[in-house]
Length: 361
Image (cartoon, rainbow, N blue to C red; front, top):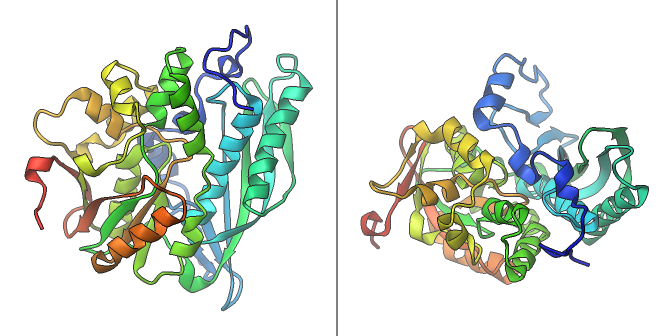
């Protein structure tokens, strides 16, 4: 059962967390600084994907037919219903497997609870929520690890598999590729409004539906040779994850501003000033690599840097196949999927194109 944005209860799970969802990720600049002096994975010829291009998961080649995909993801609550929190966190963690073109096979739970502040039944509900999403993905939660922590934390370590030729990295985009986004943006803005009891009930339901929609279409997209690169859009926002694709692929990316899909109330709430701290941190981390249209208002810039919790897939594909791939994605249950731009030759960067400057034809 979904919790309500303002249900009159004195206790809120989110009150125990200083941040929530993917908005509590370290900023891109801090993460890059931390990893700058870390040793590379080393001469492991079977490690096909490591940390070199900030990809979604590690990939190890078991043999000529099978790759093992491994990831972990966890965060603090962005909703007050513990069961829903578990579902959102699990959906987000499993997404990394789909973003690599793989199929999940099992998960392990990661649980941190502030002992003495939460009743055991709350932790049980979080675990039940995560297990329910794992069941939808067709995998077990086969164990895990728990600790006493100052803030509630939950997530999964997930293992998946794929054939080597079906692996899709974030660094495989090619000049001329079309870009497709499978889910609408605006979760961070919704979360900011929710924390202040300003999110309408209909918008709350829309947010939960988006965050608990598994990105399982990624497994099928990985089998399509017209799909060259994929990544999921989470805490760094559409700009940050597109920039990771641009840097990994050695290309520039153009995004058509008016083509971006938004949750129904995202622009209204952004105009009203609802913005996350992560949006500011994101922009400070990568703003110098982004070219915005002249006169773009700050609320639109905040939306472009808005952190997404359990967001959609960003897909780079051959332009001649883009319309058919988009139809496939929509027919798989992602009705708001949209063509949002293209990859072009140039220094790795992002250019936001307003409608009046967008290429025609």
